[in-house]
Length: 173
Ligand SMILES: [Zn+2]
Image (cartoon, protein in one colour):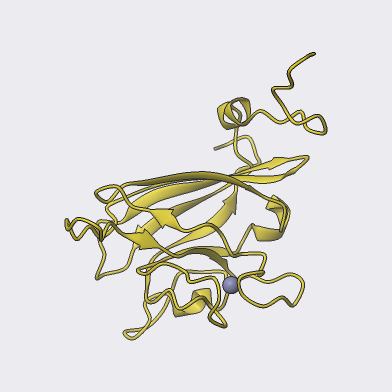
């Protein structure tokens, strides 16, 4: 009997995808209140969907056992990270949504980031959008976990960091 190591319908191998060049990226920066947050989110188009690779440092760390940070992580509809005193990333607007879905079925609803003394690394596959559909939108990190139930945004609290998604297609990057 032959043992199957990979799903038969897929020729996808995550490690090799991550060695190729991403089609789009967002540079993440914290708000004035969270200036240490910094990172990159990369988007790789595959036949099965988009692989998202996020590496974020400087996330809030309370240094208390059993309270390691978990941070809501979404693609938002808005096209820039400007805002106001009350909401520093107000222009990011609501969750990116392609099919008039409720939360957590918006196209832009992503797995939350798990902090490790302020560092989070996450890689996952989603077929809710293509890279072309999210270029020009924004990535937002919230200060609380997403509860994946409350409308319209999972009760994930303040927006602490933001990045605009830019295409990396072209000879000069
Ligand atoms: Zn949502």
